[in-house]
Structure formats: C-alpha cells, structure tokens
Length: 314
Image (cartoon, rainbow, N blue to C red; front, top):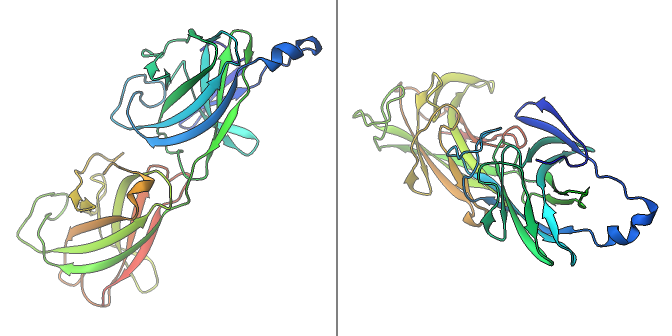
C-alpha cells in the first residue's frame, strides 16, 4: 500500500500495529482541504464471505471475513485511491490492523479492486462511491469494539471514520434433558456405540451481535465448585470425550483444534438452541445430584470471554 503519510509496522500478536497520521495542511490549503473526500455511513455487516486469509495470506482460508461498508464522497473532484486501512481502536491507540498491502479485500461499488492484494491505484469519479472491506476474523470482531477506516490518496490521507460493532456479550441458559439417544461413542468417536448418551441443551442469546461459535464443552463440577475429570468437548485435541453438537436442530461437523465447530450466527437469528450429546463414560456420572458446567466459546474469546452456565441434574 502507498504510505498513509506515515506508517509504522511492528508485530503485536495476531496482527501488526499500524499508526496512521495525516499530513497537516498549511494555512494556504483551506480551499483544498474543504474539497477533500470524506468518509461517512460506516456499517459492520457481519461475516458474509471469505476473500482473504489470516495475517498476510491474500487467499481465502475457509474462515469468513468481517465485512465493513463505508461511503466515500469525492466532493466533486476526481481522485485516485491508493490505499485503505482498517484499524481496531483501543483507548487512544491502535491494536490490530489490516491494509491493502496485506489482508484486506477492497470492493469499489461492488467490484474487487485488489484481487491479488497489490497496491491500489483506483480512479474515482466525481461523487459518492461505496467501499466494502473484507478482513480476516482474528478474534477481535466482537460486540462493543471500535474500528476506524482510513483511505489514502497520492497527496493526503482522508478524514477517518469509525464504527462501533453492535450488540452486547452473549448469555446462555442450559439444562439436562436426560439420557436416550445414541449419537457418539467413547473417546473421540463421533459414531454410535450402542450406549445411550447424555443430552444437554443450551440456549444462547447473542444480544444483537454477530458471533461465530467455535467450541462447546461440558464438565462435571464437584461440591466445592471445581472441575472434575469427567466431561465432553467438541475439540478433538483435548483428553475429554467427544460431543455431538446440534445448532438449531442441525448437526455440526467436528473440525480441528483451532475451530472444533464453526457456526456464524447473525443477530437476526435470535436465540440459538444447542443440543449436546455425550456418551456416559461411567454409570455414576449422569445421575441426580451431579452438577455440570456448560461452556460456549466464540472466536472473539480474547475480547468477549466465553459464556458459561451451571446445570444441576435433579
């Protein structure tokens, strides 16, 4: 990407830290400044498609990207767009960042303008254009987070615009529905073994936020509130027995240790029902008087902690 007046890159966990400052106009530039493009109507549209990968991978990776839309008004001038950056705002600074030289897909009025992730050089006509930006989900597209969009031109950095992701942290309620169905075996076997499974249900309220379900776990809790060794997990990389996971009645395939399950949930979905089935490894586990913790994990767990609830078998 052409320099955004000044760009500093340094590794910070899952992304690079990008600090952007615009060149200050001189006293004689007032008329020019008044005609500079402005950004308005920024909206987060959730997890729509997969155009780019993680970090500097410009190819799709099977994980849906976060989509941001913004209107750019050239204010009656013809301009050449040379760069776009998306930055997560934390306090007075910037944490994760995406730009057109690495992992952001840029669409202008519905047309992809950087299919290979190369530098931009897009001529914009006089008037308003719509930019759609797709950035790989790095676990930070969480409710309440603020993101800034910056556009660059050969002679200046445009005014910036910000958007706060909608919604609030999710909540969950759960219960034990008994033993009966046989959907999984012992260990990590995702096939029936002739033994009835325990059936837990959970209802997840996403509270107006876009979320991606990543994992679900059920653990037995002792009388002191600590976690026991017995339990089930959708994650095939753990030592716990496997879970069969249904989301709104549809069974979800078990993936890898990064995304044991992968279910994007739109705000319009309303409360989401999870049905969880785990093989009873011991006849004394799923009995009256026992307590279990049901934990729901989302991809943005580093920003919004996992959601958990207790279930008491009566």
